[in-house]
Length: 288
Image 1 (cartoon, rainbow, N blue to C red):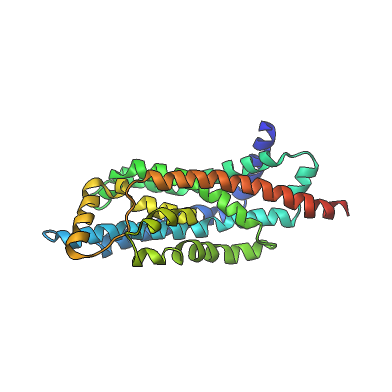
Image 2 (image 1 turned 60 degrees about the vertical axis):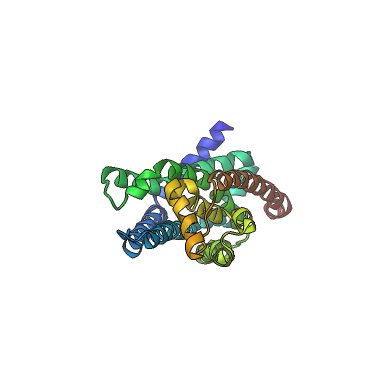
């Protein structure tokens, strides 16, 4: 099976490197994340001698970063979803199956290549921030370890989530157009609305990350480990003193475990649905 995985990986590499989507896949996340960082730093600065405003701005910065990261990944993975639909349109995947390609080999090769593409943009961002440290990006540097762990685990969850949605489209053009908006608004913006009305509710804290990988990523970004223990404790003090409630995650481990569980569940569902679709639909088409 390792030979088949290698074949799928090389095929996707050759196809992608010749496609304009490679620029889209790499540059779009970088552009969105950089814009988010700039907006967060400019709109929510540290205010000397004003602890209340500084803590509110600290939470707002992390939430802004999280929002733009989710926006970047929702639009970035449209190319992954669209390419899978395109392969189904031209019957490449199913002809491969007929010729002996094992389904797990196809999907393992696919996710390995997509992981490489997915991790490249924020690896570049980490490298740039690490090479040019400053007081403004000190918050990023302080949480590099947690941020890297979060994004790696998130990628293992979000990619199979994207693969699942590829089964919902019949045309690649439709996937490119509608998938980003469907996922960003349907699985991030709209479900998180209750967070602003009941931010300290245990139901919101523990149920929201289960809804989608994007909400799990948001929970990680607003966790005690990412915000820092001092900021997290000050947020609690500010909340009690001024009756201002913030959504925070007591521990990053919970959303990380949810992401790992989602990764396993989504990948298994991809294999099951792919097997059902091939057996019930595409094999009949190929036989005819």
